[in-house]
Structures are given as structure tokens and as C-alpha cells.
Length: 507
Image 1 (cartoon, rainbow, N blue to C red):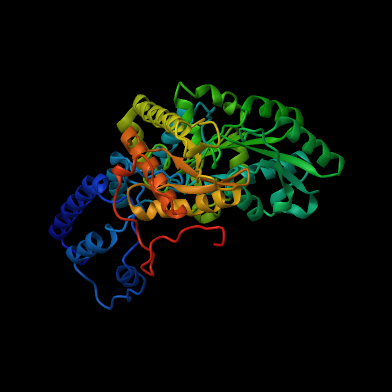
Image 2: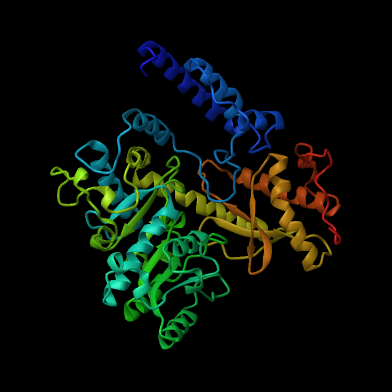
């Protein structure tokens, strides 16, 4: 700020606050998402490196006119895509304050370090996971949290086999084998590959009809690998699968892991916080028996991106995997737990904890639980609406806040239905009134609506289904049907100016 006066900064900060408030106020009334204007996209992509600086007021003008008008859409109450939340108001404010302080939260005796210890404990308490001091760390997201947890699992497996992995490397070990299902998030495979274990040693175990891990199949796979001389070491269970939100049966999985000396890791990226809803809390029984849990405050809690969290049952497993303290980082004030940089890969670490603290403190446990319960209730209601509609098909039970369903073109064979449902998410998105994404479920194309925003209403659900039916009818060339009068904006056109192309048997 050497060339910015305090008065200039104060004026710009106030203008920024107004800009943000105006943006948030307008979100519900604007299209959920629209493609960027090609000229605006090019202007951002081709922006030249400035030779001279520009005043803060000019920068705000660019932000307000060229950046904020082209959002992802996840702040809108009719955004049902992926697992991206609207930002919590308290988290937005705290993000600015954290940026103003701009510490490295690697360690030392300053507020951000101690606050992170507290909020990691809060997160563990919210989901009912046992927490010992130092048994957790904030990360960029569950993808990085998964790397940390699986690295600890890998090192423990080597130690139990009589090897020091940090000194000897993987070549000393027989193949380490992990077990997941086809519903497991791709970050697990990425972590396995990054950790040098090889994706061929990550075995896919069968699921039951609801998409939950099958215990008999897991038990048989472990026995087969032991007989073949491989070393089973890891089971990954889901607290809300990415496709349908199914929750794996933790208690029997934990029993098997205890018997076989396997590390149980739970991917709770968004779904673990469902344990706060009394209506579905029973699904999470046994999650507290896991060796590690990865989850994202920046999903269901609405903490502004980025913020994930790795929780481990035994602090020494995480610290023993990553601790390395060169002489230039020695710090006598660090205390018994040392620095956070001893528990993960990041050395310079952002001040993530303030926005977590603010978000949780603003709503409290009761408010967070109420928000989550509202989302799951709305998801169950959406499932009911789908089941009652002859043009739609519910593909899986609604266990958390994800609804897996598909549009059923009249008299269409399975091949045509798949093609229509593969095209539908983009067709709905382009119309601008709702945003939904797609995925594969048991080999079938589907729509996947994820409800994370407590501001969503049942009317928003009706709009989503109207848009699915209307876009589906356009894709198949049929009339919209009985609710055509609800209409909506004209269908979005593709870059060539033609209406979204119809899906036919020849496309």
C-alpha cells in the first residue's frame, strides 16, 4: 500500500462493501448462470500485463462490470449443481479481515494458529468425530485432506510391516492395496496415484442396490489379496457418495477394518455434516470409529472457498508422516504440538480459520443443524415430486441432500433416454432459470440435484422440474406438457445461433 493513501484505501474499501452487498442482493433475481459474452471472455483472457498501475477505483470498476456479472451461479437458490455452496455472510466478512492480517498459519504464537486449533475441534464436535489436540488440520479442500490422510495410512501400514517408509521408500514393501466403490470420489484415486501406490492397487468393491459398499464383497477382496501376497491397508467409505448421496454402513465396515488391521478413511467431503440432522443421523452410526475423516467446511457450512479439513484419530500418525523441522524454522514458542506445517504439505498456509470461526459462530450449532435439516427435507420433497411425475424417474433413495433422477422421453428406448439425459444438464443450464448437473448411475445417464442452500424454497424445486421437462421436450421435439403455461425465458441458443440441437437416434 506504499503508493495508496489511507484515505484512498478507506474509500475503496467502503465502495467494495457496497459492490458486494449490491451483488448479493441481486443474485436471486438474475439468471442462475449464463455463458459469458465472447467479447468479455476474450477481454479477460487476453488482458495485457499493465505497464503502469491503476487507481483502486478503476480496479473496482473492472471487477464490478467485467467479473461479477459472470458468476458460476452457486450463490443462487436454484443452483443444484455439483456440491458448491453459497458463501456464508459471516465468512465473507471474515475473509476480508484475514486477508488484511495476511499471516502464514504454518505455526508460531499468533491468533490464527490458536484459532485453527479451536475450529478444527469445533468441526470434529459438529460431526461427532473423536478429537485429540493436534488431530486435525485445515486444508485447501477434501482433495488435499485425502492426500494427507492416505499418506498417514500408507506410513502406518509400512510401520506395522516393519519398514520406515520415509527412509526406505515404497520399493521395500509388497503392493499396498486399498478398497473403494465405484461411487467413491475421484480424489481418492488421485491421492493413491500421487502417493506412489498405483491405481491398479485401488480395488473397486461391489455395492448394494442403493449404492452402499457391500461387506461380503469387501471381505472376499481382502482375503484374495492376502492370499496373493499383497498387503491390504485401507478402506475408503463414503458419508454421502458423489452420485446419489448414499452413506456407507460404517459400523460393520469398522468391525472388518479392526479385525483385518486396515485403516478406515471416511470421505465426508460434504455429506458428513448430515450427521447434524436428527432425521438422518442414524445413517452415520460408526463414522466416529474411522481412523481419518476428510470433509469440507466450504461445502455444506458455506465457508467461502477454500477450506477443507483432515481429521485423524491418532495425532502422531499425521505428524509422524509429515514432520520435518529445519533449523531455520525452530521455534521455542511452538509448544508441544509444534507447527501446523508438521502435519501436512503446506509451509506457508493461508489464514483459513477466521472464516470458519465466523461462519460457525454466526449460526451456532443449532443454526447449522437447522440449515442442514432444511436441505435434507427439501431433497426428500424433491424426490417425492419426481416420483409423482410420470415424465420423471427417481433412480436412488434420497439419503442426504442429493437427488438422482432422470427425464423419461415418451416411448423412448434406453439408448435415446440416455442421450437425452446426457444433453439435459447443459440445456437446463443455458435457459438460466435453474442449474443442475449430470452423472452416471449404474451405467445410466442421470440428472443430479444437490441441495446445499437453506434459502432454496419448494417453489424453486418446482422451477427446476419445470425446466427439466421443458428442456427435455425441446430435446426430443415433443410438446412441453401440462405445465407449459409456466413457461420461462426463450431457450438459450448455441454459439451458431441455432436452438439447442435435438437429440435423435442418429445424433
